[in-house]
Length: 319
Image 1 (tube, rainbow, N blue to C red):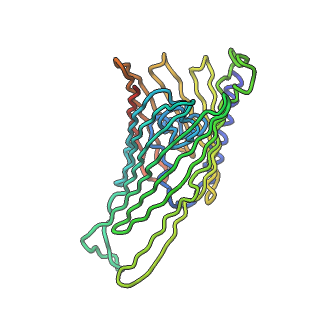
Image 2: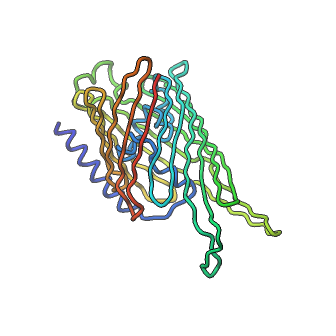
Image 3: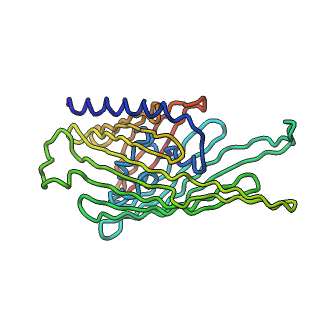
């Protein structure tokens, strides 16, 4: 227990240090930074080293082989300022210790009044939305090594303009326990140690153009590449899951995320964490049906920079 306490304290310290260094602006694909599934959101977004369910498609595609049943997942993030964020996906276990997933992540940014150069309203509005359509595949190549990739098709609309792009995410998942002799980790205070590594947004770039009124203007918005490292482990007879992520956007400062989940009798789960300094909390409950399992998850994320607190609700059907 002493080792676990020391590890959790260090995670909290690193989270606070990194959070103090992230006051920088946004770039293309910023909506991808928000956790839209309730389980990872409740754990502070620390999920690169977990990614063992449908939500893992958005964090580490190498976790896809951990999904052992067909899963339909959906979630919605309730946000202020007219913003919307939703997610639906389908996961399918495939042959050869592998998994395949299809997903759609939607972000809407509400409406803004149109104004002239003097600030006077023109009677219209401008809206914006963004989509990420994903195809995920992951395979367990060895007991200790899983690899995965996610092909993304991005589509963004801003008023009467639109832009599209293709992007690639690549991931690695390493099971530390499998590197030791079989059974040697059983009974240890800390078990199921995993490390995940992701490299995201490869080749992703929005190219904008406007040729109205004979004008030719172009604008390229490149998605900053992202390198992420996550570790997770279980303790207290595998009832406690602890995770820590370090993430470096090549255009912004290093950030860290920390989270934990405690399992009560395999049905009720309580979660908490820190996401770039913002407190998160959540819970989950599993309902056993005749031929399926329904998982309900809820998460709360405290407000940052006066943008309001968020509530995330998810439903997963496993069959």
